[in-house]
Structures are given as C-alpha cells and as structure tokens.
Length: 147
Image (cartoon, rainbow, N blue to C red; front, side, top):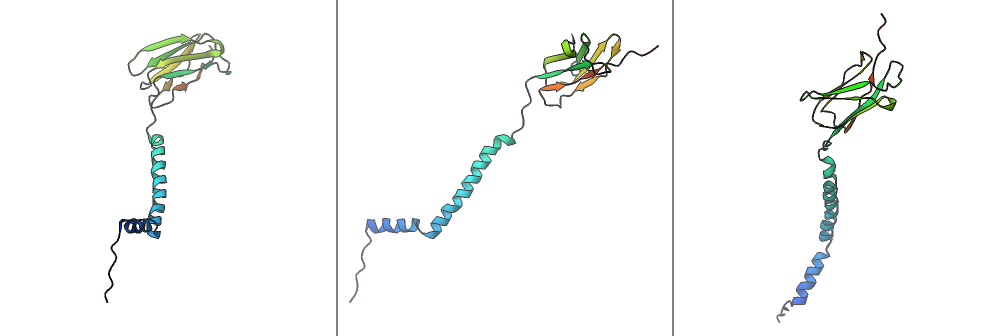
C-alpha cells in the first residue's frame, strides 16, 4: 500500500520559515551584525574629529612692553607691520604696559617692535603658520646705553 503524501499548506510553509529564522546559524549571523553596527556608528561619530581644524577668522597680537627690570612701560609706542602687504599700525601702551592689535588677517605674517625714549625692543614675529587666534608677544626695551 502506498502512502499518500500530504500537501503542504500555507501554514506549514510559514511554520518552516519561522523555524529557519530561529535556527542557530541565523542567530549567529544576527550577532555579527551588532559589532559591525557599533563600528559604523563609532566611525560616523569620530569623522568630525578627523576633519581639518578651521583657521580663525581674525588674529589678535597682544602683549606687554617691559623695561630691563620687568616693569611695565606706559606710553611706549608699538608698531605692527604686516609683512605680507607692507602696511603698518601703531599705538601707545596703556596701563600695565599693555598693547593689543585686533582684527588682523590670520593668513598674514606680522612683526612687532616697541620704542620708548630713543630705545627700541627686539623685533618679534607672528607667523601665519601659527593658527592661534590670539598671539602674545611681550617686548623688552633695554636701558639707555651709558656714554
């Protein structure tokens, strides 16, 4: 006697698919997706950190003018020269011997020198390669030479 095979109904097919989804191989595959997803999220979050640091819109050069005893000099003239285009700016030091040049172009090179009573400080430079927004350059004016 021959046995008749039962035809699979729609419910049997669905049941078979559910069993395949629950199989150990399928579970291992889904476990591998978790580390891959974590890696993708970490890469996406760290991308802005790898981007090139933007240069500031303007640069400030500031500092103090001091005498040989490290005391501030009020009223010393300070000249800032843009070495890229040759323009110059000047000002006098305020209380505490402080000076400040603001709104400078960050991609230009500058030199700064102070003068007081016929004596001049060393020339200091602010480079365009220095990407800080504020560059501090303290200047020292030596005492007058003895005759």
